[in-house]
Amino acid sequence: MGASRSSGTTDELGPDEDSGGGPPGCSADPGPPADDAGIPGEPPGSELLAALLDGMDAALCAFDAAGTVTHWNREAERVLGWTAREAVGRTGFAGWAVRRADADEVRARLMSAMDVPGRQVHEFALLRKDGGRVLVRTQSAGVRGADGQPAGVYCAFSEVHAQIDLERAIALSEALLEDASWGVVLVDVDLRPTVVNAYAARALGGGRTALLGRPLGELVVQGVEELEAALHHVLAEGAPSAPAELWVTLRTAEGERRRCWRSGFLRLASPLTEEPVPLGVGWLFRDVTAGKLAEQEADRLRFRTSQLHRAARTASECEDPMEAATSLLDFALAGFADHVLVDLVAGERLVRTAATPFDAPGPCLLVSGGAIPARYGPGHPALRSVERTGTVRTSAGAGDAAQAWAAERRWPRDAAHALCAVLRSRGRTLGVLTFLRAANRSAFERPDAAYAETVAARVAGAVDLAQVTAGT
Image (cartoon, rainbow, N blue to C red; front, side, top):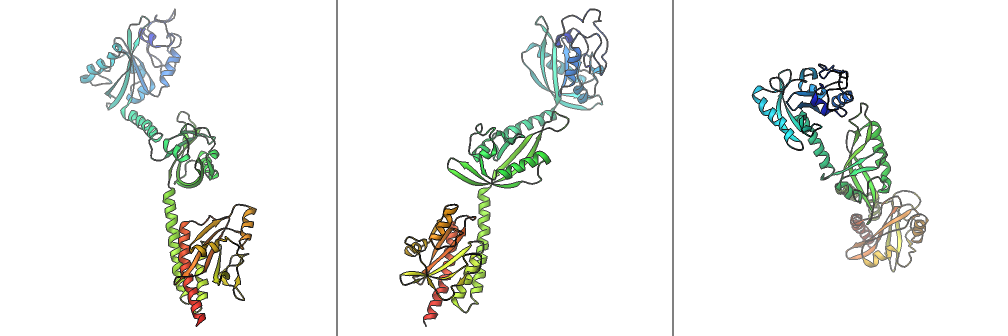
């Protein structure tokens, strides 16, 4: 792997050489180097130096104080095409690695590094062996001898486009991990965050350093299994072809938050090994909760509007107004609630007039044998809805308490969420409509109340018509 020629200056560049021409019995000028072997006659350590130089990713050459090339590694040969045997021993680059018109300027700028501290960066157009030109960026620095005097210059260079690609890659990684408008989390093979950018830290509800090394289960209450499964898949199989939308529940100081993250994943592998060794996963995501909720609300609104339209057409074909009312409720129940109860005002109390089955899903039917009194206790949500002439929403706790809660209110045992909407027509309160959901569904919200009130207004019209026709 030799890539140098022994000389006084070369001795100063090697890690173990002394200032002499070599150990006793060795010629001071052993001749040209072999391409893949240590150089006979070089001081101890020269084989190691040659191997180190040839193993570098950057092209490297060195000059003695007179400007003679003393070192030339394999990357320099790859970039310019000149071998170490052809390069070492030449004076400067004139006539072979640079145009003669530019040779003096290039030599002066390179050799000036002997007289100033630190490194100097230059860009030159060099000549390849095949005659082509290549623009390189060089970093050169002076070399001092044992006496402290300038002894030469070493110069590391690379093609400008390769250097620019490297700088872009570094700049991109720094931008992603600092100022990106989406979350970036680097996860190790144990699925623990190792780098978190500012966006991701805000989304996860913690500081950038506080999140490092913590299991994802400490940050994500629900949805962590799906997230970890995606990360494991990336480590084993590689990145998926399309982003994935993950719903998670986060534990924050303000309580639990439900979020939707549109996520992309990249498997990270070391570029320094022949076989790809996984370093972890790059996880990029954006919080799209607002958009997804808006889409869901739009879909829900379209479906409910369609159901009301179909219900109105069906009800218009019913001769019996109460049959029209129950038909309206059958359409309204789809995707909205599990049970519905119709209690109408009869003097000072409410009577059960129609309902869905308590023990199984089914259509809303009139109570057989006529209406029966609803044995509601004081403060019952249905009574409160009538008293307030408005809508009442309520929910139970979890477990056995939910069954006791439902039984106490004379509702089906599986009921855990209730919405009571008053039936009003021509300025009169006709009764109350109660929608019930089981514990495996979410509680009723404001949009649900608006929908229930729309249904109640249509049902109230049918009930009013039934009462008017019954009285004539």
